[in-house]
Image (cartoon, rainbow, N blue to C red; front, side):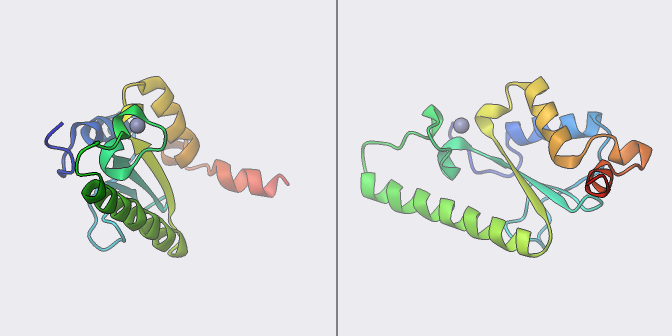
Length: 140
Ligand SMILES: [Zn+2]
């Protein structure tokens, strides 16, 4: 894993092609939003980050294990990444965006991933034009 941190990482491409197959329209790497989200769905006002487990500090993930050498260097660097991520999420939420983080290690299980995305975005909203979220709110 030497290329982690680059823009078109493999997990990100997998998520993008999945979204495409699910019929969602999205934009990538919008520079006008905090953190330049990997994927944004303007129509739903939702963004998705595809995070590398190591660089973004996936909690309790074996891939996020920190190197035992240069401990201080890595701690500073990775803590900074995590803090930046946190701030970006806060900013996005303040702007009215919902945020989903997909971790690199979660991309392997496509059916599960698909389900998470459907729950996050709201099933059928794109194709049928029926907003299930609004229905839920009205139903209460
Ligand atoms: Zn992970």
